Structures are given as C-alpha cells and as structure tokens.
Length: 487
Image (cartoon, rainbow, N blue to C red; front, side):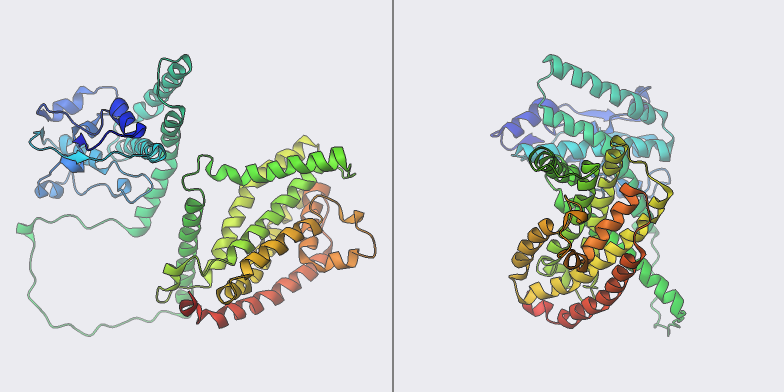
C-alpha cells in the first residue's frame, strides 16, 4: 500500500511517523510461533495487514475458535476499529498461518489536513485500547493487560519526556491525541459492548455446503398474542428512553465535533462570564452580595440551561428535516432531547459550583437533597415553553432571532448577578411574576443559604408548569401536521 500523494504536511507526517500503511515488499508468514514470540507484550497483529490488503477463506468463520469478526470492535462502533487485528489474533491462535504475499500495489490517499490526521490517530489509539481489553476479557491474555496498564503508560511518559527535551519532533497536538485516545478507549469499549448487548450478536456463520434448504411450505396463520396495556406501555417507555438517549448522544457529538476542548466549553463559557462579573460588580460597581462568586455562578448555570435550551428549540424542526420526514417518528420528543442535553451540561458544571461554595466557606446542608425537585420543575417548565417556540419558528422564521434578543434582555432583567433585595419595592411584584425568579431564589435557598425554599413560590411555580405543559404540547401537536410541508 503506497501513498497516492505526499503534498501536505499531514501526508508527509504519516509516512515519517507510521511508515504509511504499507506492510513492505518482502513476503513473510506468521503462525502460532510468531504469536508466542511476543512473550511479554501484545502481539502486533495489526502489522500483518488490514482489510485493504487481506483476504480470508470463508471457512475460518465457521471455526469454533474464530467465528465472525468481533462486533464490539466494529468500524461503526465507538471503538473505531481493530476487528481485523483481533480476527488475525484468533486465526493464529487457532493454528492457522497468515501469509503475506505482496503481489499488487494499492494507492492510498492519506488525510490532507492535520485536523483529520489528529482524529485518525485518536481513533487508532481508541481501537488499540479496545483491542487490549478484548484480548483480556475474551481470551484472558495477560500480555494485553500488561501492555495496557504498564507498557503503554511508560511509552507515553517517555514520548512526552523526549518531546520536552527536543529529541522527539512529534507535534504536541498529535501526541496529545494519542494520549487522549488511549484513555478514551476505555469508555468507548464500554459503550460498544453495551450497544452489542442491546442489539444482539449476529448468527454464527454456516458454510454453504452445510446449509439446508427447507422445502417450501405454505404459510400458516400466525396467532398474535395481545399483551396487556401495561406491557405495551412498558415497551413504549423503553423505546422512548432508548431514542432520547441516542439523540442526546448524537447532539453532544455534533456539538463538540472537531473541537479540541470538547465538552470543557461547558465550564469555560460561564467561568469567563463569572470573571467579568466579579471584576465589574466587585471592583467597579461594588455590589454588596455575600459569596458573590457562588451567587453569580449559580445564577449563570441555571439561566444558561434554560436560555440555551429555548434558543436551540426554535431550530429543532427546521434543523432535523431527515428525522421529521421519517414515517411514525415521534416529533414531540425533540424538545425533550434538547432540554435533556442542557441538563447534562448543567450537571457537569454543578461540581464546579460545589467547589466555589467550599472555597467561600458555604457548607451544604441535608436540604440539598431537595435539589432534584427543582431540577424536575425547571426541566418541565423549559420543555413547556420549548414546545410552542419550536412550532412557531416553522411558520415564522423570525422567531429564533426575536427570541435571541429577548433572552439576552432577560439575562439582565433576572437577578442573576444581583440580589432580588436590590430591586426597588415598586418593581419587585413585576419581577416575581417571572417563574425564573422563583426558580433562581429556590436554588439559592438550597445551595447558598441552606434553608427551605419559599413554599408559596414553589407551589405557584408548580401550578404554572402544570398549566403550561399541556398548552404548549397541544400547540405543538396542532402545528405538527404542517411541519413536513413547511420544511
């Protein structure tokens, strides 16, 4: 396998660091002795070839020690590959010999951009970790465990040391992608294994000579057993849960695709805002709010969840044309997906708020156990408003732009970086009409003040949420029959 072109730095770097994808011009064989020769480390079966220059007899897939390719390592899974390397391992372990005979050239076009190369190297290291874990869990090969937990960490420690001394010229981003891929492989392997467990494995391969062709029989009437209503509801809930989980996972991947910092932006944005507010309202305007960092950061997190979810909800229908046009797709689930994604960001940033509380000497009390109630109220309230906004933007495309301006204005009107007590008495009743004000105060009562939220405010907030949800959902359903036509 030879490079089709060597024009960009990324293509040249592949040839320098990885020797391209070529297995060379010299024929060789690998058998069980080759496999055993690597006594203390993982056998590098990936050096024997890849799908572009490898061929297998179909009969080996029926071998009891080999079987089909490992689906946990499939190219469509989070592990990003390594199923070929594991198939070669099983083939050698079963007593077969792998023969490499370079009889043809394959021209391969390497990644032209460095960003594409970084993702490729990241994927290679994820698959390397998954490959080692597979050898350990399925074959109990201790060499793989030793390689994963001892050899690879030592290897990367040496690489980083050599890079710091200037002996290794590997670009830092490429080296970090390898290290991150090594750690990401654990989570990806777990995700892939769960996916295979849910979907089930493929049926074993049966050689053509052993397949039995059953004589044709006229179809018999099928007796369909009707399950009870509770059984159908249970199946429906499982389906909805799986669908929400997959769509949320898709949104998170798309949101941070090609981002070096990834989900860390969840914390960077509010922390930068907090730094600005701390300077302005501590050094310039001097707002007298105790524990200002925790006070302002809590308000930012709470409002950012609602603000981002509502803004993204307006583009849900127009931005998911492929899903909307699918027959029987539950369109009403899309606002729930968007708000759930915001909830995940909120929960990821919550430990940072706890750190701020600890730094400023605020001790959490058992009342913090009421926090899930507020999370549920905010979730349902946000979904209730997201439904009509998503439907309205399909007909009136200015909805999203108008909402962006209103949300920005609301950011300054809400007591996010100043206390409600600073609002003049004559304006305070207008503030309390907004349910987000009651929500902000309830969060701060639990987290900062260690006291129970005001019962009347929570009751009013619950009533507003219960009223808004069916109204918003009805508006959404009423407009849903026009979605396909409008988009």
